[in-house]
Amino acid sequence: AKVSFHHGDGAVDIVDVDSGTSVMRAAVTNGVAGIVGECGGQAMCATCHVYVREEYLDGLPQIGEDEEEMLDCTASPRDDSRSRLGCQLKAGDDFTEIEVDLPAEQS
Ligand code: FES
Image: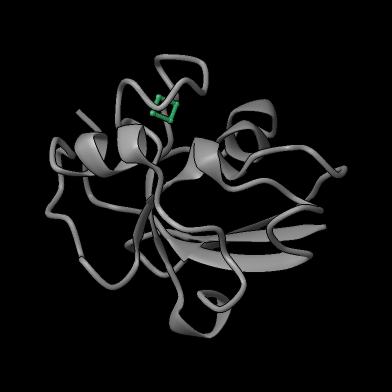
């Protein structure tokens, strides 16, 4: 699956990941700056916050309870229509291709 990370300065990192890999893990294992993933994917830190581009919102799973709570603790402002935790979006199950904008801050 293909994950595109759009940085605030216009740079884009595109990585290819196997099924089961989260958006957070895709960034961390490929050295993409702008995602921290402090809690390791437990929906407990909100340092994997991303803004999903509108055209990729369809088909994503609903925001879970823990995710919902953490999204209220993000360092950069939450965007109700497209803020998600990157660790809760998995290649294969949730998307085959996705593009996200990176927030200015994660902590
Ligand atoms: Fe901690 Fe996603 S990695 S909430």
